[in-house]
Length: 138
Image (cartoon, rainbow, N blue to C red):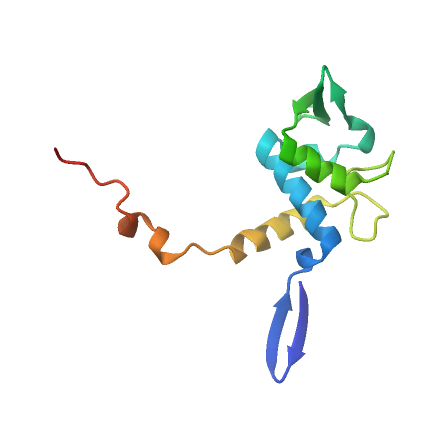
């Protein structure tokens, strides 16, 4: 996070709000969510691992234990990866901020944690106020 001080107040502006980081984080979240892969598996993928297989777009990843697997990607993940990769033909899919190396697991973990903490649940969505779990009587 970038922190600025104005008139004695601290204001934290999350770095994921800039366009390049938003595209990268969106693609990462979609791939993680839709494939159920581990963060380290997805971060280890290169552009050459993003391909078509029998008419489906897939991402080849190295599973825990070294086994290679292809995970099928749905349309939202494909669009996000296409936007992220652009015209690149080699190197890691997920680049670090300066574009010189692979996106670090630690950075991803801290960004996802900050993102999760920034999302708050509205009070009306709690199970008590929404009536969830009540039995219906006939």
